[in-house]
Length: 206
Length: 206
Image 1 (cartoon, rainbow over the protein chains, first blue to last red):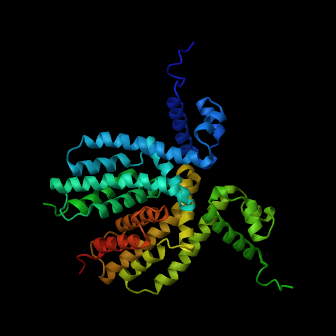
Image 2 (image 1 turned 180 degrees about the vertical axis):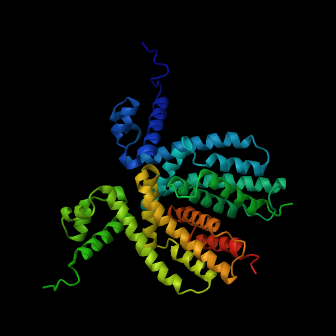
Image 3 (image 1 turned 90 degrees about the vertical axis):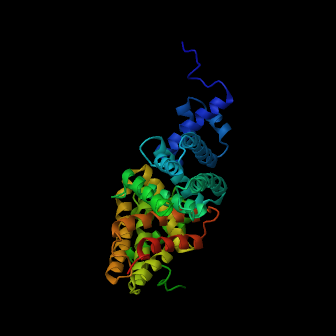
């Protein structure tokens, strides 16, 4: 007999985390619209009633899955970024962590793409999206400011403009990787973004 | 009584065009997964059987809608681009025509975003996507080559690299416009892309 300590969630918080973990994975693999509440319940070994308790409507499923994977990605990135002192190296580390390699990061990208498609059509998805997106742009802005203070980035670099451009370029390049555009591999994407950082921030820096 | 010349499609080709026109519009407004064959039939005043004749499966609906709006966009762009002799002005014209202004172009972007989300999860969507995407990148490459010949772009500009970067930046910026990211308007997107062209292709050109 199992002690139940590992397989059975004991608290409300555990149960919620387990459901979210199964949900974002299912959405990343099958697509939001193909995932039914009963699929989530099945994977978690629980009832559809329990899942509905956490996701009152179908849109909550996608909204919560994005929040969950954004929170996880930020927690992961923050820890690793703080360990890198030099702002240039820190920005390259951020770029590296966001490359859509097969596995967790690619699955997170799959969720973002679905969320963008929905948010384009359904404005109610936009406020949460914009909050998460602003966090990402803020991370870039702070690294640019840090690099200017450290003298590793050009003194005339505009953190706001660089953040807009780098996030746009990252999203666009990721789309090409994820849809298999010939000539755009993980390596090409990295090179494109590293070159961007060099041209916008490093070239001509004191 | 109506003569039927304008409202009733008379040929198979007319009927197909009418169904496709209704379909891409419905997908752009409601989202691929929310559109039922019966919705398309209703808008076209035809039967679900007729619609099924043109779209044997649900995936064909999205695939054909993308093809339809890509073909239309290319036809529209080709005519207007050919009228612009100077390659720099031609590239700026292409950028301008792709800004996701409310209306037809924004609806076309909505279809692309949905297609990306699907193609990430379902590899069977990728070959068609990549064919259309390659056409776009080829358009950019040719304009860059033309600009080099005309001496309006830098002689060392790599058409392949510029096409990869400009398409990625355009897609990423459009996502920010379409999801309503604060600070990213149609005007900001235009500025970002015009600056890119200047920095990559014009600055330092003879």
